[in-house]
Length: 320
Ligand code: AHR
Image 1 (tube, rainbow, N blue to C red):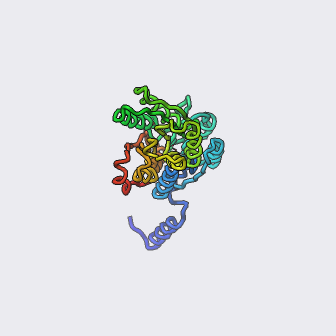
Image 2 (cartoon, rainbow, N blue to C red):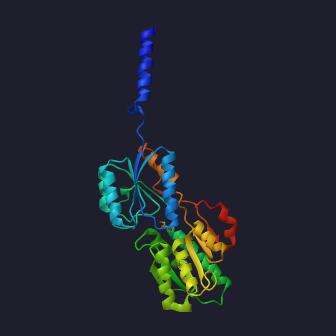
C-alpha cells in the first residue's frame, strides 16, 4: 500500500485532533464515598488515606462527611445513586437500617463497597466487598492483655469501667463482645460501669468524670473502645487527682500517635492496633469491580498490640 503526502497529512491532523479532545481520553472512575465523620484521630488518618489513594490513582472521589448521623449517610448514598457514580463506598455509622438504601443502589446497578465498618443485612448481595479490621478480635486482644496483667498481679482487685464507642456501631458492638468473652475466664475481672463515649475525646472525658464521681476509688481499670476516648478520660483522671496508667490501668484501641505519646508519658498501658490506612485497598477494589474482576467478599488487615514498654521505640515509626 502506498501513502500520498495528502493522506499522511490528513492522518497526522486526525491524530493530533484526537489527542487534543478530552472526550477521547478514558473516563476517570467516579467513587461516591460517605465517611462516618471526623470524630477521632483514627478517622482523620482514614479520610486522608482514602483521599490520597484516589488522587494517586486518578479517581474522582465525591466525598461526603456524615457527621456521625445515619440519615446523612442515607441521603449521601441516594445522591450518589442520582449522580450515577461508578461505585459507592461507605463506612457505616451503625450496623442496622441499611436494607432499603442498599437495595436502591443494587437496583440502579451501582456496586457498593463497605470499608472499615460492617452492616447487618440479611441479603449479602447488597454489597460486593467489605474491607476492614476484625473488631471482635481487637476486643479479644484487649481482654488477653488484661488477663495477663491480672495473672502477674494476682492480689489486685480489678474493677473495670468501659467507654463504649458509638451506640450501634460495629466496632462498639464487636469490641465489647470480644473483650467480655475473654475476661470471663477470670472471675476477678468485673465490668462495673459501661457507657458510650461516642468515640470522641470530649465525650470520653465527660463520661469518665461521671464514672469517677459514682465509683470513686473503686475503679482499677479503664477499657476504652478507642484512643481518643482514653485520652479524654486521662484528663478526667488527672483532674480527679489520680495517676492514669498507675492508679487506673488504661487499655484502648486504635494505635494512633496520641496514644503512643500518652504511653511514652506512662499514662496509658496498652493500645490494640486498628489500621486506618485502607485507601489503597479500597481504590484497587473499586477499580477491579468496575473492570469486572472478581473481588473478595471480606478483606481483613494485619494489626498488632502495643504495650507501653514498646511505645517510645515505636513512636517514630507510626504513620498515623
Ligand atoms: O470504625 C473504626 C473506629 O471508629 C475507630 O476505632 C475509632 O477511633 C473511630 O472513630
